[in-house]
Length: 92
Image (cartoon, rainbow, N blue to C red; front, top):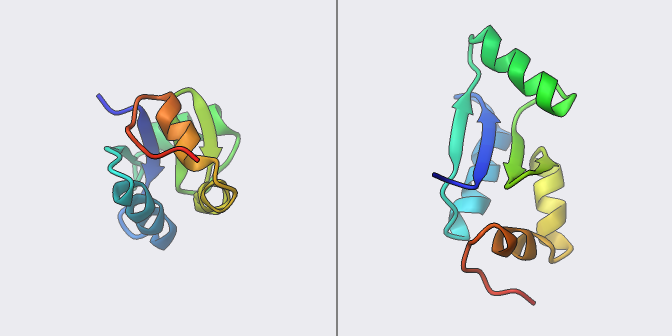
């Protein structure tokens, strides 16, 4: 099972961008689609305190949304976080 989880919807452009970035690094994503599924939406809000998608977890770390993910990438911290959960990425 993947160590990366993303709450998302079918039509969210930020979800697509997050997926594209993670897949480019060889990451398998376990996606939880919340489109019209109140229980999944409520679960996401309960876990994250946020009501927007995507909401991304890498291992036990709640990364946040696409902006947070891309900031980690810009700062050079995303590969390190992915490496810590078992992905073979080149770290710094």
